[in-house]
Length: 334
Image (cartoon, rainbow, N blue to C red; front, side, top):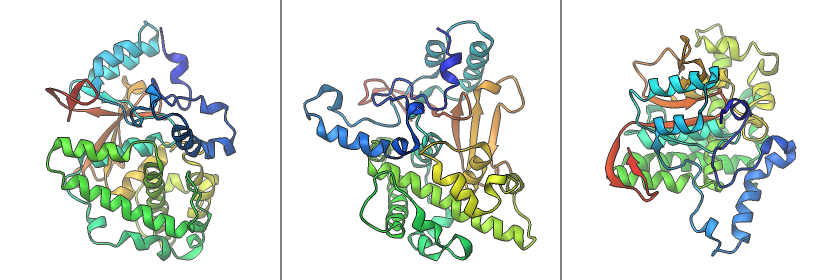
């Protein structure tokens, strides 16, 4: 069966236990979708066989070529093109982990790779008390934090919630950096990516880092200073002329009714000081097959790698395979 039709949909978590066609939901329904899932899991009987394990939003590794052949059967031009892309990726990576395909997908895949691969904290996190950043926003962006809406709500003020999640982001990052071995690192990652409040809070924290970075870059542009090239594209859009409109029309909606656009992937990488290398499988016959977000720090920043078949849904490649079985019942990819 060819997958041309399904690949064109904006969010398609292939094979996930929690799959719901979210394209049919209204914005309000989409906003509360993670919270609804959370409560449904706890309302159902604990003995339910489907819920014996917490659903992981980043799936167990599978062989990347087997996945390609299974998911992209047929000889349509698109199927052939995607398989060609997977074959090229397989020269470097043996496995693939599917990422839950909701509107947080790009953020989730990026955060997973950060935690799975980091061996030291980035300088900006070591040298700063990031939990103070929400209260330190200045200028026109100062009141935006009060407009933040978290998927699981909560009784605390938005500044207090964001402060908590930024502190938690640093804590989880430190835990994986100091993990004793690959098994301990995997266990730490699994504790985060369970589709619960903590995971979504950390994803919102990444959005805050993007807003804070955008505010700094926009201020630098206003002063006539040099800024990365992507800033010209980011702030040239009618819908994001300034950080306030970027937040209102884009960042606030990420996870609710849309995902990250390409120019926002540049902002994400710049905010984290990580080069996000993306294999864009549907462009495997072009120079855009491998895209770097951003593309001007490849030699100085750590690199994490993602895969996409459509610039909307992102998966995670894994590089090597060991012989021992993992708790998922498959080979363990490190």
